[in-house]
Image 1 (tube, rainbow, N blue to C red):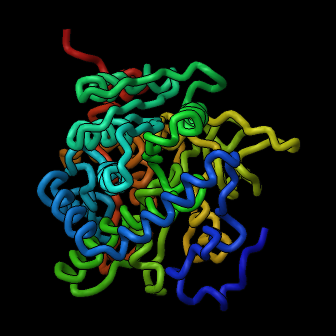
Image 2: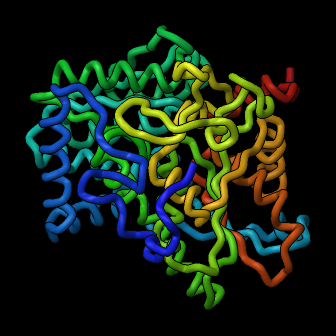
Length: 410
């Protein structure tokens, strides 16, 4: 699969085009009933983007309510143990609600308020986007419904309780694989039915235009901060950025402000599951092909007849059959490298970071930590890695205990 010629993309920050396309990816593939609300959302978002009052309000809540800026922390003990590059952690896990998801949920909630909507809906896998959506809904007084696969409700029970405590209705989805893909389907059905008064706060850099560009721009605060922080600390840019990639919001948020810095390499880490075997992983770049799923064109895990394949990951937030269109474009251009970490590697990284640095990461983020553990020893001690620690692991502790056999005291 080939994308646009690299020579035409020396500035990687000019996409998407007016049709929402990142080269051959992206676009708007939705039922006719959703075309107008998407156009309305696009127009309102771009007006808000250039409105100083909207940006001032967004900045205020990011700082005062969410806790930005988040620290860029040198993991000294991990760095020493690995014996190579200095490893910095961008601490999105310290944000209110415990993950990067609040950046986008807040931005879209302000848009919903601006558009006069009274109800918000969302899909969620690991539950962090659901919690973030329920949080901003409570803060602004929206009615809130969260769709979540029944399997994910079980493995992320803590976040289900948190959403309910915040006043949201949580709807378990029992169709299909009972995970994130099915939750998105149900959210889209709801939106089609209730579009006049409802805004769909989609949680990742995926879906029909303008969601990929909008979500990326709400999350670019991660990379903007990291850039300023590393220049203050080291007086130079990092050598390597690492982030996990499900739909790809935390990764593109970190990567985007560095895309035109050719010396800064980037690694997106997908869910390798139990290995790159059909239906046992969620690494779209390790077996996916060009397809359309849930509103956009990108790499999709599908069979020869175009039927969406089942996926697997120990991480509910990475367990998805498609990847954001901007990531597909960046892969084709060779600007970002994409690899994967298996369930076992992510679990090992989860425990290692907890025991060496006193930081319990989300299982999603542990995939990125696993890649850093692998890469850092191969790099010089003068090198710098920034890992996006996209969320904290409170929600995953019970699952890790069950998977690793850690014995609880009697």
